[in-house]
Image (cartoon, rainbow, N blue to C red; front, side):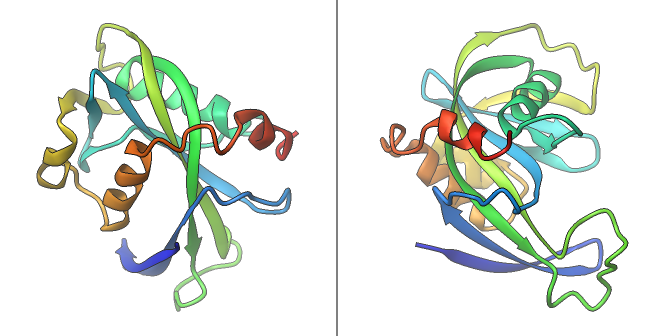
Length: 177
């Protein structure tokens, strides 16, 4: 089931639609990847400079497939590694954004991909990149700690369900090669 919300990102009106297990087409543009990363039943959150606590993630760099980008981002932000399972996408739609520029850095419609990571390795937290802290949070405490839109809790709920074998990472990678 899809869920929507409208957010204001730096004065820009953007419609977000959560689409669990959405299979993207090769023409769909992925702008970022994010991981709900678990170890011993707790979720890792990272504090971003000036943005509060959130799940690790970031932009896909040229030449990366989404899973590579997420592995890089979770290491750079949380200093962890693990096994990934795709759980869905948020469609980021700027159609109602009067300030949208076709020549800007984002597409009119793009996608943020979300994964569950079962952490297999935890490294010393070195603060070499853009995060200042890493914390381990009981899932029921996330609404009191994480600084994000309302869809984040729906994604957390999906990450905690036992549907992890529904979508193969191999199928996802083939759409981007």
